[in-house]
Length: 430
Picture 1 (tube, rainbow, N blue to C red):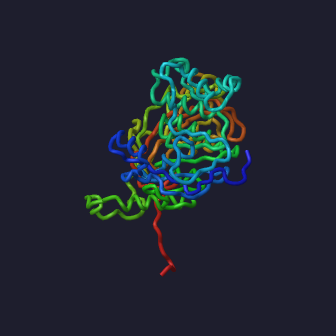
Picture 2 (picture 1 turned 90 degrees about the vertical axis):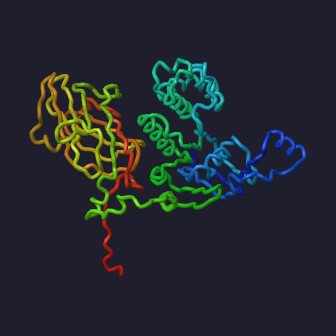
Picture 3 (picture 1 turned 180 degrees about the vertical axis):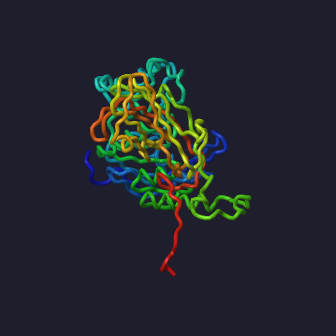
């Protein structure tokens, strides 16, 4: 793919919808050539361009015209004014699975959709194993889609779309569906798509995702362009505007004087809810040991259901040797829903001078003590592992992706991947 020039050019693009009281009124207006006086502007004429290879975000409250704009990009609806020009083939991930035949199997629907999206019979047949593997819905791939859960529906829809050649990827909130593993797989595929020179247009209500993933962003408000520029700046302006509109009231918490220090002011404002260790989670490795449990625990040894940002944390990993081990290392990675590594650690520095040994059948564990960082609202996963050797030269025995699913339900963090409580001191700024 070429990485030069603009791939989407928007010139005076607008969309006006009619508001006829009844279908008969609409027919009469069409026959008489009358304009609908009750119509409304879903999009006031816009002018902007999107460069090849960039990730372009679109943000705004419900009803601001975001989905209307994407449908104009995809040719699903026609503009009332102006035009949009696309250089390259666009793939719209707007409604995953739209058009699926409920009585057809996943494989049959995949074949039909691949043909509709431009593949010939040979290409569709060649890519079917890749679609099946990406969807990862097991025997349901050959069962009627009416038996699918919403997550399976989303997996199949994205798997089909991910294996059709395109230059432009147009995404409307579809990464909010499915489980955390699916979201991570989608995000990884999108990163690889961009690395190949593809362009991504992303609509999301997740302000931090727009700021973190996009190069530039457009803020729409009631169909009008409110701001266009660097994604982090547009996202910050949008967030400030939304916060200014909220009625904060006079709650008791606001009336109470804050504790000393920035960390104390954030204390208790982030809640992290932990799920159980998933024994069916996918793992890989050469064998020799298996991770049997992992997660956050209380000081009394009980599995923690809820944790608070800024509080002391104890993370435990337990494994069982299936052969004699001479220098095992336990470790973990903590990831967000986009598959980004936020933090991690392992036991190598503790045991490198005196490697521990375990006989086949022995159970061993490690504890990691620290302070839980402040995280934005969203979903997270814990990936524990056991290796043998050193950090530089080792064999992967067992690595478990998405072993534990966690969710932050409330948080003071608005931007960035983690929050760091700080206190500004304006020395020499008088």
